[in-house]
Image (tube, rainbow, N blue to C red):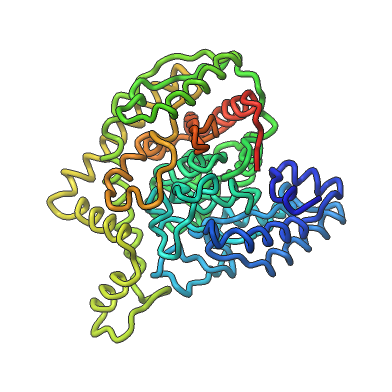
Length: 485
């Protein structure tokens, strides 16, 4: 097989090629590494690539396969968002404050992939500490959309989305706190799954907002996402928030038949400012589901209008607490010539954090401060409960919800950097799933005349990833376009 053919494979196709002896894991690593070397200087999907270690892991995987051993991902190269700890690799969170930090351990998600034979190719760019929706907030460099280099890839998992959609990785891990897997997947034209809160262990994930963060797969097909989700899921004694719920065989349960499935369309998601092309593509996706046998009903999520304000209070409050650990004392950047401990903290954090991270820390500290805690943070938590109840009532009458993933397609690089509020408002369709702790999937459903992808968001009840994966797979198959590398 040629390098171009190898780079365009899905995970399942690559596993079949490996099984048949059409290629080796070393072939996959070499082809991807060459492509990264050639094209990533312009795309900026990766922050670091360790070809020697990846090749050694690939050689071990090839030996295991030859001996009739190896796991469900034996020999598959995977890219990792630079917020997850991988033993022996830097974990910068795309921030200067973690310069020089090397992870001494594997995150649980990484350990589970490693146990199944995955090969770790490199680390992908992101908005600093996962705070942003365009990957322009990275302290390292800007990532570009592989469909059009003048546009953002989304964020915060923009590097992972760009790598998968741009032919530089067969699959990747992302994290989703308010849409950071689903939005870049929609912007770049790949598949992104945000699991239910507690479905995947967060141990080894550098925390942004601990009650919202989730780790999930970014792939080229829903079937690939289902396989990775099976591996990532399950209770973990190292994470007290992980849930001891059975993990279904997601990939084996996929069908293209939606008979007997009821899908809800939220009335509140037809917001002012919804791009006409996005609206048209999502309506066409809803029609496909109906043609596949699904019953489609309108539902109401009445507290949607409060979601953005609620999210940016809860998320920033938790960020303020979580990022207090980066103080120049224990690891990462440490400013020299400080006069006393307080001066050390102030100078290190001022030099190490970027503008967006500082903005969120300040906001979060304010809403937690004496005199404002009840007025903002406590009230936001009460509204969060109302948002969760909205979804519970909707899922009492339907199996999943169909919505746009984003109100617009990808925007131009630099277009919104001077207006953070406009950037925040772009999260209107995604933050609700994190506040409610439910499952969410973005799957390509069309494109603008300029070729910018459009994503369909499928939301399902907590611990029911199989619902969103089934609907996503059926829609993907009915479109009939397949993955185009």
